[in-house]
Amino acid sequence: GMIKDMFPDVTDADVRAFAANDPARDAHEAMEDMLNDLLIRAAQSKATECVARGGSDAWTYYIDYKPAGAKMRAQHCFELPYIADKLDCGLYLDERTGETLLGDEPDEEFGRRIREAWHNFIVSGDPNGPGLGMEWPQYGDGRATMVMGSEWKVQGEARPADLDIA
Image: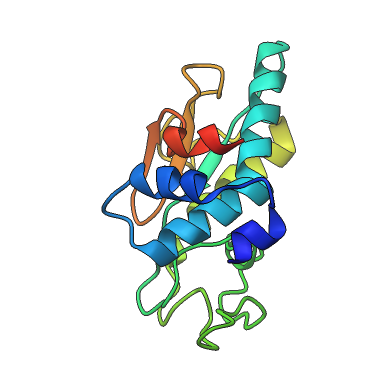
């Protein structure tokens, strides 16, 4: 429904193929992922790849996180209250339930780490620094992506098969 209304070129077969990339993902989560990927992530991934191929420094991250008590996992702009250290922020609501996306107990350590990475990047052009607690490689190093959740880990492109939609 909503995806095909916004993207008329997307077929039922495209939607089925996207959902089949991760059979453990429920239908609603697959729809959220596909919509986010079509609107934002696929273009961001292509832009980051072009920047890295052009010889410039590039880092990327993917938030794979559902805070305790949240009814919905992280969505676009989820990190902003954490970056601003405004964990009581009520602006980012799950429109279906009226609940905040930050859940019952926003993760202060998640906020501290993401603020550290952004601070480092603003100051030096590199998210790495002693407060991060781990090495964040550049994207050009195997499409390295910092996957941020209750644990942080470096991997290749997040959900790469899903990016075939663009």
